[in-house]
Image 1 (cartoon, one colour):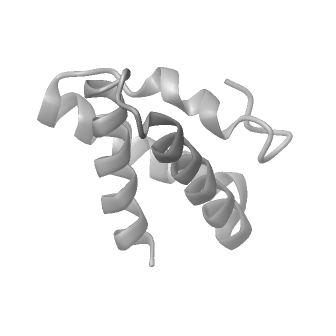
Image 2 (cartoon, one colour):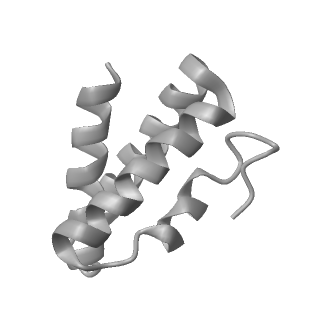
Image 3 (cartoon, one colour):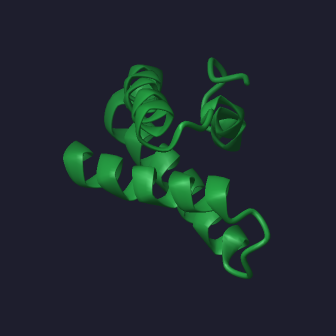
Length: 83
């Protein structure tokens, strides 16, 4: 499950980073938030940290952008997740 979510999350975040004015931006952001809730339900805050660590590095290597500002989209899922 995590591998599928990682690929989907990567695709969504790269799209949002590269197309912030796209008409479906809000839908993509909503799905990113859903993925965060799914990950948290499955593995807690550690699952969020592990997934975002992987995504952050992939985004940096593959498109040369910084994904760290998008961590805030998962704020509110867990009391420990505060970005």
